[in-house]
Length: 192
Image 1 (cartoon, rainbow, N blue to C red):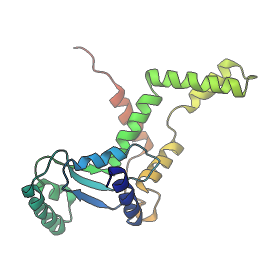
Image 2: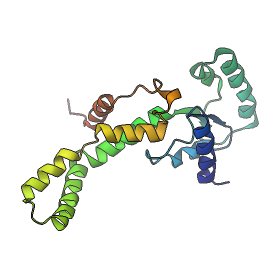
Image 3: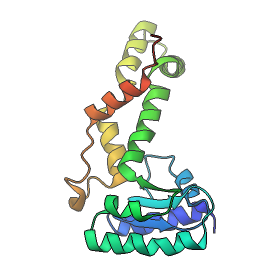
Image 4: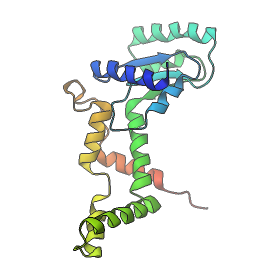
């Protein structure tokens, strides 16, 4: 089965679980499933994924019982994940959405990416509305190029199902926090 097909099956199960699906993959290179997470417009295939970044062994698979015993006893994924073998990592959907949106902001609304996007949109606007003064068109585009609260809410709701009644207070990330993260991530180190 391809990772794409696997991710689609997980998306269907995750939708039925209101984005509460925890997937543990003992398969070799199970983190390949994360390659399917490129579109914040689409529901994440799993709320959490515990998967290997490399090959796994039989003893790795056996150690999953330690993970499940701890998880069921503590009801705490963070505590249980320490029972996993080395080379297994935890993916959490809200963290991934932050990474996807920071990449979007940095590539399309900052620096060279922003300038290129403004020029491309300006060309399109000039073709569609030649009567507009170039300066007015440019100002209009610049005022709307940043990730808006509405766009953030759409991404958050589609990727996390954050607008679902059961998830109402679950995902705490705000638009302002995301923009602050992106701004910090966009800084280049200075020489001392």
